[in-house]
Image (cartoon, one colour):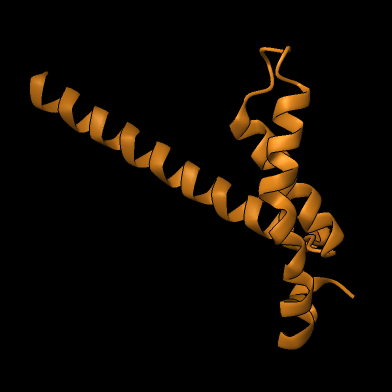
Length: 94
């Protein structure tokens, strides 16, 4: 069962994996300190992702597609608004 659908008690129990995030991030950062591509923020983000995998915190494809559609709609609306503003400014100048 995924974490989002679980009861509050189960969610609380699964949040125990977040306790290891600082230690995991520090360990990853120290072990990869010779590589310039891995900084502490990247190590932290990877550690959070690993904790979420252990918690079974994931999104289903329908949720992902719904969110992408929302983002694309907002992006398309903002592009249309910007193009309308530019055309209105052009009309005032012209």
